[in-house]
Image (cartoon, helix red, strand yellow):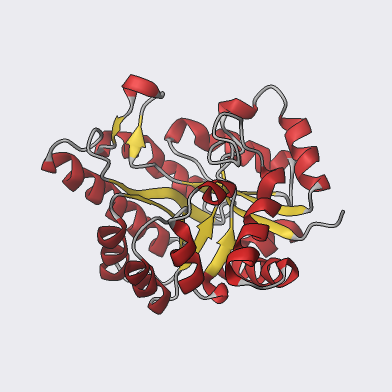
Amino acid sequence: MDGRFVDCHCHISAQEFDKDLEDVIQRSREAGVKTLVSVTEKASEFERVIQLSKIYPGLVAPCLGIHPVQGCGGQDLRSVNMQDLEPALPLFQKYREDIVAVGEIGLDFTPWYTPHSQNREEQQSVFRKQLRISKELHLPVNIHSRSAAKVTIDILKEEGISRALLHNFAGRPSVALEGVKMGYYFSFPPAVRRNEQRVRLIKQIPLEHICLETDSPALGPDKHVRNEPKNIALSCEYIAQVKGIAAERVIEATTQNALRLFPGIKRSTEK
């Protein structure tokens, strides 16, 4: 099948894909995925995602960013600090011609990650620093916002960001519409099918501001099963169902939106 879908937020360099990445890539192509906008969460992932973009040129479109939550999972997870960002700084410059966005960056005010105001303040400092890097590099941003929707959009506005994707957005529709006014885009993974609270949000955000994502290997249709980019059609079908329009229209609009938001995708497919 020719590629028709753009997965605007996935983690193709995640260790969950190490053992069978070639098969995962093959299944995504068979499902009609033309581009995987692949984000990173920590500096140690940067070289890997760049390497994958060379192995799969025109398919893997890499992003570099430091996530607001750091650690190796489970009990080790903690709020980001400036020391996490330091080793990444020279790599943004080194790979500036290779990346299509700065991400995954943002804010996560989940109480157990940010028990103190100092944690929230440091997250915001790391976030603002990466937003400024994106402006220096003339790149869009790929954003995480959990329990921090309004603060995230306020900071994007304060920093003069004009091109942003808010992935798996779960804030109030009124907050999302503030982002729409700024020209931002919102993407939804297959897991939204399990959450009826997103119906109002998807209904109110215009199709011209929606993109598709899988957030693979997380946020799939079954929370106990590893998610893959091949499931992108499930997001598409759900958005079409909620909006009462044809899936074909959603594919066409979201792909055009992705190409507008991430012009580097076109460059990577032409290399």
